Image (cartoon, rainbow, N blue to C red; front, side, top):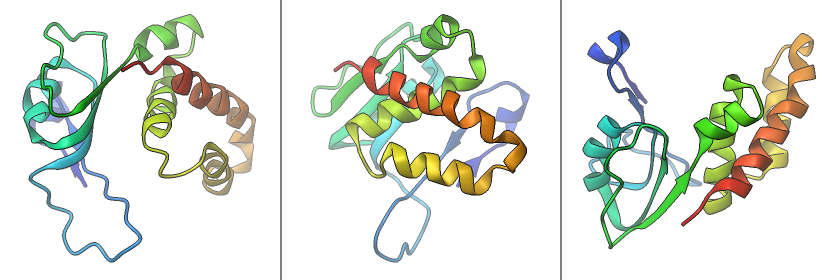
Length: 144
């Protein structure tokens, strides 16, 4: 469930994703099992909303004050630097997803790739190997 308001004009934006084998009664959450934060504004807002024992993953680029909680697992990924290294800023989201799936394997990389093949028009299938590379790179970059 995306949240866009003044965020569309350059502020922080957020999205809630719920993965469950059971029926989801409401997409509204007050606390999160996992938060993936990509800027300082989001870290400031969402770090406190991770449940004790939960997971926080953050991209170190642009984070001036790293997370400090001791009751959650904190992982850092240098996704922005990785996109520069592979010279492809469009791979950022897949690098972050690969890191997330390393920590929380809710689906396999193979199933992500199958999903891409199913949803992308055939003319874009040539991008699937690049996305696979980005997913695998993200899995190698995540650090506790």
